[in-house]
Length: 401
Image 1: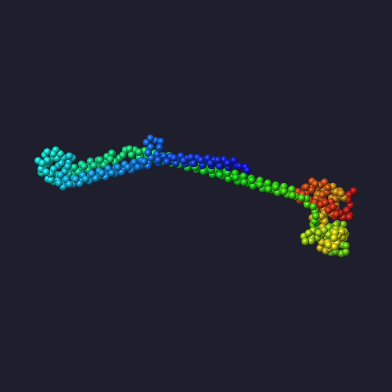
Image 2 (image 1 turned 90 degrees about the vertical axis):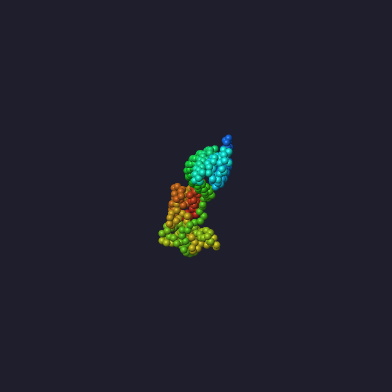
């Protein structure tokens, strides 16, 4: 079996492209895995999962601190309200006195408390209270808005680093996917071209194989025909006329002068019995009229079983009333020579060919005519033996000396 080199190369390229695609897929998968899980070869190796856990823990700590601050602030506001109900206000470490404070002589030894006296009015105390509250709110606002309270620099740097790495890896993946898509498109286009070439080559190969197989089959059939072909000899005659009437030792045929019948012409008498050819005898023309001929019986093969009678057929291989037969004479003969047989054929109404070919009807084969018999076998020409022809020689025929 022969292989097509183009088809073989197409299969190799397809395997190579498949391997490249698999390697690129594995590399991209490893890059995504490193991005998601981190690089274990780095000293500060932490996976995204670990960073997420740290971020959640820090967020929980911040939330707990905020809850603690809010609790303390609520406690302070509650105490401030209690002091306000007693007309006492704290300004830093100093206690601003009011109507509810003890007398000054009871507090003079306490350096942390300053006595303003009973003369302070309610609106003054309220104004001071509002001023102190505003200061505390501004201090609390500054604390809440401070960078230390709102941000975790290390965590934000790590997040920014991871985000930048994510952007880089995403860009790299996008570029690789774009290149991969372009390569896949080019490979697909090339594969389509190779597939077209392969299909065309396969079709041409199939067509060539079909033509050669057909030719081989034809040659094998021809060889078989030549090997099995045999030279066909004339064993049955074609009818040239029919016996219309019989009388004593004579018969009347339904053919005459208009059919080119002449006195002395001999016919073989035969019939068909259940599809089988039966020869009955020989007759000779003695009188010819326009549409009929009178013949005498020369021989009857079996008078009891197959007597010559009305309706029997007559025929002569050399004679033909519609179309003259063409003969080719070859070989050596015992009773007559080649020229005599050719002369008899012409006088009986036949034609003699100079070359044996497909246009010949019969080959008159004598001895040493094997080459002519092979040609007749090839051209499917019927062959006659010397006796088959000479049995129809009329008595008036005079051979050359």
